[in-house]
Image (cartoon, rainbow over all chains, first blue to last red):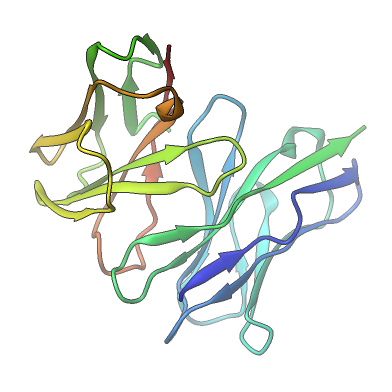
Amino acid sequence: AQSVAQPEDQVNVAEGNPLTVKCTYSVSGNPYLFWYVQYPNRGLQFLLKYITGDNLVKGSYGFEAEFNKSQTSFHLKKPSALVSDSALYFCAVRDTSQGNLIFGKGTKLSVKP
Amino acid sequence: ETGVTQTPRHLVMGMTNKKSLKCEQHLGHNAMYWYKQSAKKPLELMFVYSLEERVENNSVPSRFSPECPNSSHLFLHLHTLQPEDSALYLCASSAQPTSGSYEQYFGPGTRLTVT
């Protein structure tokens, strides 16, 4: 079965430190991978996606993600965290049989001053 | 987020009520989606519409009834809901439903409470 996993329910980071939010996937064929962010009482906002090409993808708000085919991972990263980055982050992968997105459970990122 | 709007933002309804959720997208997309987001659960895809035709219904109870009158509007009609249906209902749209490379854009959601 195709799936996506976010192994951490919560990630805590000090402001100014680098952050990583982990995501692994399982699909048949080439993966289409996405990251979304959700602020309290808001919908999901698209951050970035990997379709093909360079394994390092740059997105909104200084975020980037690294696609690693051998490890089936697509971790979200940012060199220097901001308090305003505190939110819920979702990784998603395209279901190659139906075309819809399969979302992970989400990881709560907390950035402290 | 302003590209996809949802009304109402909050809704409290009794189990015998009938209500409707509305979604409108201003992005020129031709696919629209309903998701259910419950606490500590993955996002659940409920319905997918492509070019105003329903292409997916993920075993959603019949007390949820979608309607897509045109490519810009999507409704979710609610009838005799259960308390476990309380959740955040998210609408999304995208350029193509099955190509996979197009990201989805989400509305702010309707927080539904069933009493």
